[in-house]
Amino acid sequence: MTTQFTRLAAAALLLVAAAATPAYSQDAKAAEVIAKARKALGDKKLESLKTLTAQAAMDRNIGSMQTSSEVELFVEMPDKYLRSEVSRGMMNMTMNTGFNGGKAIMPAGGNMSAGPGGAMVIRMGPGGARHGDGEKPTPEQLAQMNEGALRTARTDVSRMMLGWFGAAHPSLNAQYTYAGEAESPDGKAHVIDVKGNDGFEARLFIDQNNHLPLMVTYKARPPRIMMSGALADLEKAIAEQPLSDLTLFFDDWREVDGLTFPHTMRRAVAGETTEEWTFSKVKVNSKIDPAKFAVEAK
Image 1 (cartoon, one colour):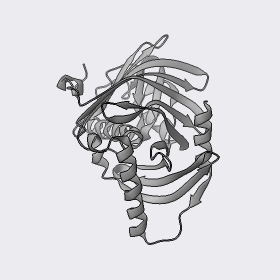
Image 2 (tube, rainbow, N blue to C red):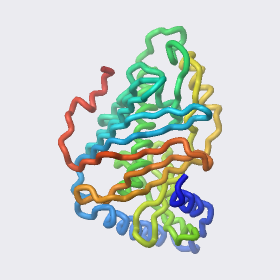
Image 3 (spheres, rainbow, N blue to C red):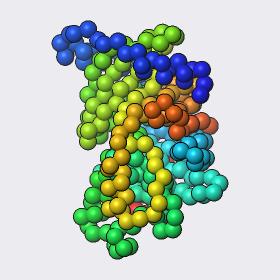
Image 4 (tube, helix red, strand yellow):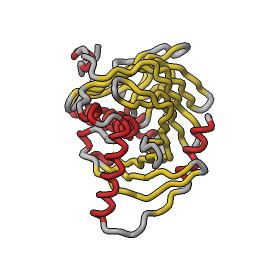
């Protein structure tokens, strides 16, 4: 953990409650803070953003298990997103998740997937998760799977977008409310509560000095290693897992085609690092092959 990340973590613990004011004043304050953040992040370039592509190396820690991956992210406004993760080493597998409009991009086989409630699941053992004894899922099950995967992907990209762009994905119709200030030895941060569709909730911290996002905090079920088994059993086990406090940190800001973009992200569960991202390439408004967003498994 770097010194910068340590200072940011301290800020989350020292939240100073906002003075009691009418709700409209709180919302006006949130709008003012976010406007300053978006100006610092790119201003008019951010408003004209059509696509964003990024490549990153990502190290993940889940308990005693450590993995490394190459991740590619593709965002096309207003309604397309793909996260393509290729794991290296012993696991050596690929997982594509995201959405194209109202349809989810589902992982094609493999042993890694996005589980119910936003949990990322790594399944160990032959066969992975199955529907019952391997029967083909019904149309109702497929619809349920699409709904869950779509919600998870929108939530995933929205947490990152809060740090990249100062705004959640448009599909969430997010509302922003000023929650107060957070103090750390290095200074103060504005705190914005974000709520949207599908129960989305997060808290965005914005540096009062440079107006750049510091971190996003939220509650979710953390990544989990599970043995293979029936999908119903997998869902039940995840649903019974308690929610944890997660933090997504943003650092190493650099100018990219008129945007100010964080080239380091770190995710922590209850203060313990689970993911570290290092971006090597970021492109703004480049053409994306429509085939990237195919919803059918390849």
